[in-house]
Every structure is written in structure tokens, then in C-alpha cells.
Length: 355
Ligand code: ATP
Ligand code: MG
Image 1 (cartoon, rainbow, N blue to C red):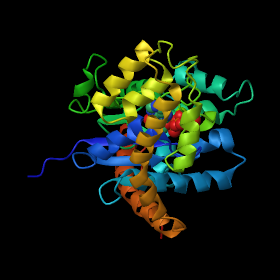
Image 2 (cartoon, protein in one colour):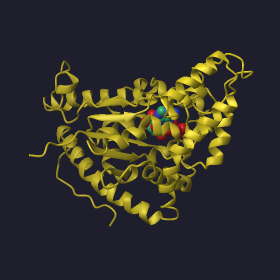
Image 3 (cartoon, rainbow, N blue to C red):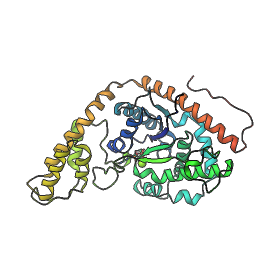
Image 4 (tube, rainbow, N blue to C red):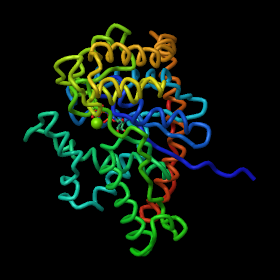
């Protein structure tokens, strides 16, 4: 008998194209897990409306560009399910149920949410829907009852919220004891497993500003779709504050995070670190040149795969149609289980996608 593969769910908000932070923080891991796991990748297009409700055309374009970036980076739609949040209604329905299980103040205390409000300058003007996205994310994940969620470090607080929701739901509606171990919830009759965050080897790639997390919204990102020239120009901007090639350099600075992550030759990395630390006549400009070359070598095959989908929106939409049909099969099953547990199972329903 075939043993079911463990399942993972993760994804991205279409607020712009994907960047190197996504690659090292999450997508590289996804590509590795494609064969051994059942993979679901969500394009969280409704969450993009939390900050850009007035720009639907951009959100639509970015959603398709993310599919293209996925394909470029090696996600294979024959193996993995790539789908749109907006076309999986069970997610919105679960969000409504889950919103009742979380104290309002608990949601607002989420440090990732707080940082985002600050960094994006949303002040007092953010929409009611903005904090709702943190609850929505618990539904994005739990609709697929995954064991693991490959994410960057910044997502760990969100995942903690998801784990809490899953525990509460199982306790409130499935009679799972509040003493139960996380791993036993499903065995004890809970609808939801308590999913784990699977943080990649690089949990947080710093942006070219040398300070903040590389982020689509902060203007400090190197995109998968950047040209070799763009990459060179951006890497040249990485701020180190070092004065001269003979000044002893700090090998924990932003530039050396890039050296460590992107230069594959470990002996060369060790040599660069040694010479930089001693101020052995090695300028930032030289190190940046090597970093840019390494990044361009990584991106070259990705650029080629991206180019194959140039102007082929039809192919991207086909991938999403197929992905949404597959995603709905599982999410509808989860919703039926959740509705039954919450005494909402008056009669069954069937859903049609993309016809
Ligand atoms: P936004 O600015 O809109 O928040 P973002 O660039 O932060 O965009 P998200 O869509 O929030 O990207 O994140 C998608 C996934 O990529 C998450 O798992 C997140 O942890 C990971 N990720 C994003 N940026 C980085 C980074 N700089 N380092 C490591 N992981 C990252
Ligand atoms: Mg983010």
C-alpha cells in the first residue's frame, strides 16, 4: 500500500515580484521537498488587497508574475499545486470560523503585524481588513491540514497563531483534551494537525540597505527577474560603512551575509573572510563584484525559464485553473470536516472551478 506523503502548505502575497529573500528563505526549500511531500503553494491575492485595494490590476499582474517566478525557480506544476487564494472559498469560510477563536488583542499583539504597520508607514490609517490577514493566514494554512510550513523567520509568529487556532478548534469542537500533545491531536479526533514552521537555512536575508529584511515593499530587494546589470548595480549599493581596503572589515556585515549565502565555493568564502577581516588590501568593490557574479550565475537558468513564459498569460492561467481545482478538492474536504465538527453540516455541497 502506498504511504501518504506528508503535506506542506506555504505561499506568497502578490505585492510584487519574488526576490532573493524568497529564494533562500522559502522557495529553495519548496523545490527540495517537491518529490517527498504533497506540496500546496498559495498565491495570497486577497491579502494583497489589505494594503492595495485601490490597485486591482497590479495585484492581478503580480499574481501571474509570481506563478512565472515559481516556474523560473523550479517549482513544477506537475508535482506541486499552485493556486489562487481567491478561488478557494473554503479559506474565507474557515477564516470566519477561526476569527471567533482568537481574542482580538492576541491578533494585534503579533510582532510581525506590528513591524509591518511601522515599516509600511500604515500608522492609524490601515484598513479593518489589514489585521484580518493574520487570521486569514491561519485559514490559508489549516484549509490544507499540512504537517509543515516552509517559511522565513518573520512568519513564525503567524504560524504560532495558526497553531493556537488549530488547538482551540480541536478542543472546542472535537473534544480533544487541552492536555493533548501537539502530535496527538489528529489521533485524538481533532480535525487539524498542529503544523510546524520549517524555517530555511537562511531565516532572514537582509536587503541591500544593509538593515531591514529584504522585502518587496521596502525597495531593498534583488528580484529573480532582475537583469545582470541590475544585480550588479544593486549589489554595489550594499551598505557596509567600511572606509578603506586596508581597514580591518567586519565579516558579519550585510555584504558578508551575501558572500556566505551566494558564493558556492566554501574555500573562496573562507579566504575572502580572512583577508577582509585583516584588511589585507581587499576593497568592498572587489567583494561586491564576486557576489554579483555568483548571484548572476544562480539567476541565469531562472531567467531562461522565465523567458519561456513571456507573453504566455494563457499558460499561467491554465496552471492556476488546474491548481485551484486540486486545491479545492482538499480544502472542501477540510471545510466539510470543520463544519461537521461545528454543527454546520446541514447538507453537502459541490463546487465547480474554472468551467
Ligand atoms: P511584503 O513586503 O509584501 O511583506 P515580503 O517580501 O516580505 O513581502 P512575503 O510575501 O511577506 O514577502 O513572504 C513570503 C515568504 O518569503 C515568507 O515565507 C517569508 O518568510 C519569506 N521571506 C520574505 N522575505 C524574506 C527574507 N528577506 N528572508 C527570508 N525569508 C523571506
Ligand atoms: Mg512580508
